[in-house]
Length: 437
Image (cartoon, rainbow, N blue to C red; front, side):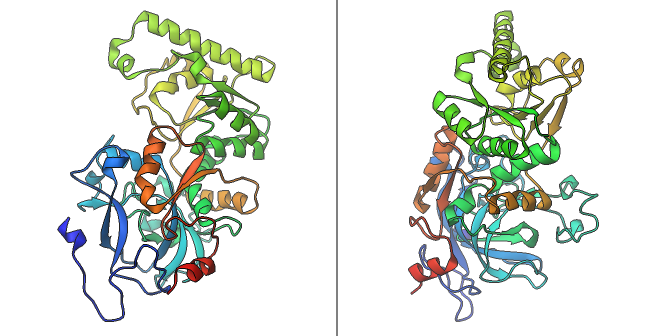
């Protein structure tokens, strides 16, 4: 780590590093910054893996923007990065440290010479999709945008997971197309909390599954970061969401968001495909128990609907434990849309339920520029509410991810970076007034 901690000297007038609650001046970029990092020799759960260091401020290219980070979201990909599972993030780059963080709210501090969609001093949010260069600046004026989704490229990457330069730092460098206006009615912490999960849910349901008014949608993890936005998007479209949750408290919370009902999955123990069963030790008794519980879940859906009806769309992100049930429960010609696998990425399910009833499995991965822009408009117009259940102080960032790892967060959470532990501010003027001088 000596290379990280080395003090870098340069021309007079450029500071070495800003203090954690020192605002500085837009356009004046220090050499180093405070950051939370993961190191090659320090994998583990969040409280072990995440450590604070001082690292070089990233340089900005001609089509890039440097953002002074005000707040960041709390996301599961940081947990995976810290654990080194399913792969080590150090297999993806050659640095000896990794700055995680895949979204942020902040103030534009520096722009490249080709950047036209923002200026120094703008209040913005930063999305995590880094697209490859053949897609230009990712604007709606790009003639290839509508016919060639940038996400079809093999060279795109998720900032802070597939790249080493994430947002859990005082500064983050982003492509211009990653920058969107911060909704003015939101605090810094609320504006940072929804970006990864909400935009992912938007692409899953709107772009990939193409949900329609009146369709029935089963939402796994309804009270989680993805699920809370999936329910609201269904409500906005006119679809009918049913939440799957781990407690009645979470189920009632989902009902307030717009779910027509909920399933407490703890009442159906045995539906899961466990690691042991996946590794070819499943018994006939386990299989019979699973079939019984899956059918019971289906009957619970009928009770909620008041008729024998199955989900047109299943919103999936848990993976191994739940996927067999998702395929079983989906209606004939139904769609299972999946964006992740928090319980395991190798799946086992009865494929007869898929082909005989002509169901479809749809993969979905974050969102492109157009998805993000359209989704953010719904936030700006207050058609979708931000669910930020807790804001952590800067020094609590490892604890925030520990709580996420242990399923203690409802909806989303955020961490303050520049304000430290001062929540509730919305503008750069408030930040400058409190932390300048």
